[in-house]
Amino acid sequence: MRKTMLDETAIEQRLAKLEQEVAALKQKSAAESASTNWLQNLIGSISDEDAFLQALKYGQEFRDSDKPVDEYDGSR
Image (tube, rainbow, N blue to C red; front, side, top):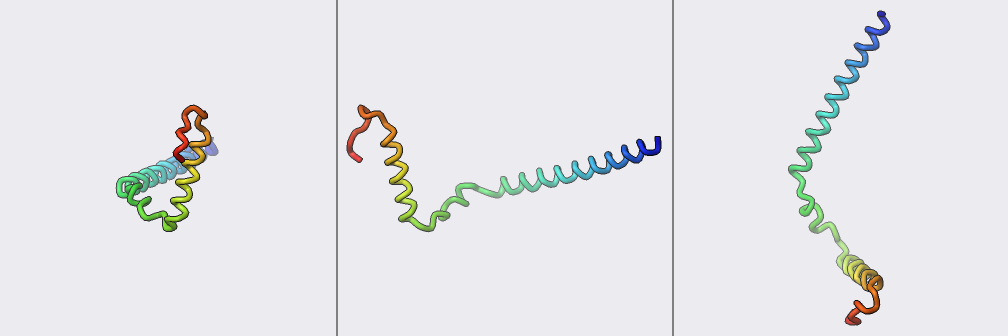
């Protein structure tokens, strides 16, 4: 019986610790998401404009190559 009591106490202590950690993580996550505007983080993150423009071109070419022939306007 004594072993069971120790086990229950240890489990309760571990559970309380886990609950505290989860609460701290939730609080941290909420604070970060409230103060972080993803768009502000993205703006200016592309430092190599030429590479970005090339990536846009490749993306457009890929989308165009996937179109059925009758939808392709031939302007690109």
